[in-house]
Image 1 (tube, rainbow, N blue to C red):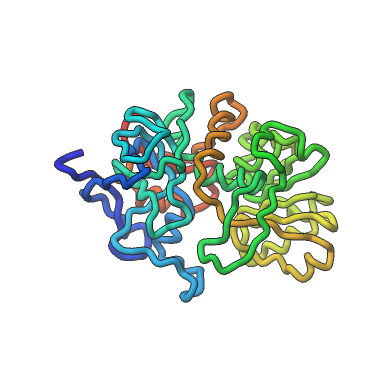
Image 2: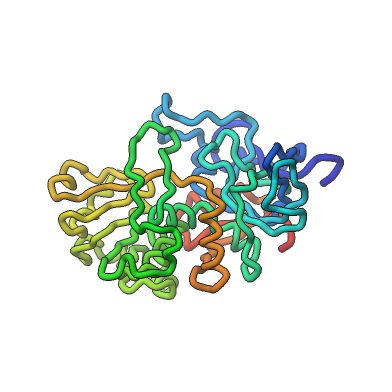
Length: 349
């Protein structure tokens, strides 16, 4: 902290990665019930580059408004350096991590910075055996996977689409467990951030996991518990797999319907990103959809922290960049084919 300023990544206009600039800005002040965190690492997530682009894929009337200039980022890991009135959970010196103020993008964590504020209940204690870089890769992707299974999902970023939030596995203390024993789960895009956590969490619940990704990810995904692997570059998943009970699709897109033949009649699809699933055809086969928007939740993150601490859950790291190179991190993200998470290293671990 230099005379009340810090270094951060900002964008003053929306556009490509080149609009991200590394510059000095004021250190934020924590409000009532918040803490100030010295950020050691910040996770890079799809909403970060969606917002940077101006949510071009969303109809204009539904696009979230992002006040400019904006500091991206919701995921952070760091150390508490100040505590505002009303805080009871944390003290100065505590190592914490979390997904902060999401999905409120207009007033988010602003985690691509040396310091960030956070409501106390959006944070969990960082596991001692996990680095800040690893911890920063967990919150959004890990909570998305967790809430798909155990509940907590809310409405989408626009709030315009009603969704079914019924937990697939009732009871947040059920990790590990046997709730999915006898079921076959297909994770499309299994090597990515959300996908590699879904692979592990569904396996911990006893499911037979079919992981779909490109061939270079096979060893990684089998090490996470995938019992079957389909290289989509060599074979159509819908031809290789049948009678799947539950499809988690982290890819989406205009050809998502090609996965429908892999599901049994009466199966379930959980789209993580929007996809055209030919819903009328799916409905005719009794296939249902359940999904929703991930939300900040420190208590649920603490469940994931315990799994990280005992080694039941692992964080895959695709790549790490210095904070000043956030534009390069976004360029890497937009090239796709990510194995695990991309993280910005902000301070020494």
